[in-house]
Amino acid sequence: MPNGKEKAEQEQKWSPAPGVELIITAVELVPRQKRRYQIFVNEEQAFTVHEDVMVKYRLLKGSTIDHEELLPIMVADELQQAYVQSIRYLGRKPRTSHEIQQQLTQKGFDAELIERVILRLMDERLIDDNLYAKQWTDQRVRNHKKGRLMIKHELQQKGIDKSDIAQAMEELNTEDEQESAYRVGLRKWQSTKGERYERKRKVVAFLMRRGFPSHVVRNAVQRIMEQQEDDESNGYDEETYEEDFYD
Image (cartoon, rainbow, N blue to C red):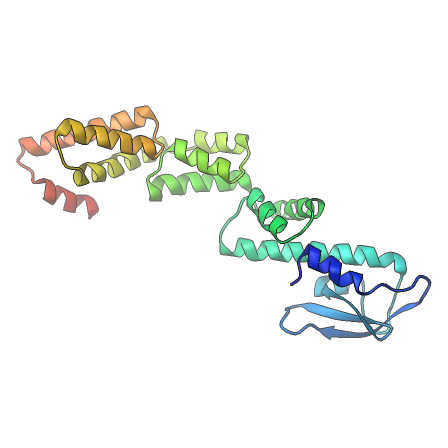
């Protein structure tokens, strides 16, 4: 499927003379391009359009086209192409409006058209940055054991609005974040060698790098230390404890 630039070059090859009656003499399905049709005008290969645009403007064999309709047809088709590109991109995984904008820009579509596509996707609830921010936050805390500071930075990189990020942070489950910090911190403790103070220092630095706030880090490390003291007083073997942790 041609992008915006390729589409413009394609249409420049066909330029009907002013005043000439434009009669559609044939309509053919474009090979290997789903739902795209080649329109022939006055026996000349003129342009291709998506099936939806062909139906909207009744581009059928034997029909006539007003010269004034050509530009709206071209714009409508390019808009449809950009929309289809976005749907394909969204089919892989959820995206933010900024990611859609970047993808369509790379494909050569102009800014005004991209804005119209994004508004349509938002109206159809196919993109929702507010919901995306909340789901991304929950998933990163639970599954990837990351803290709010790193998650906030990730959302900023994805072009999420500050207000949506703030709301996601406000609704973040603090108990889940605390538990994630503890579990990933414990794993780091078990894989670290050396004196207790040095191991503790490394765990603290590790959790801070993962974006956990200082009070979450402090609570997680305190819990790890208390657990280790209990294990030592009970003669609990650390290797066995590690197996229990991963179970």
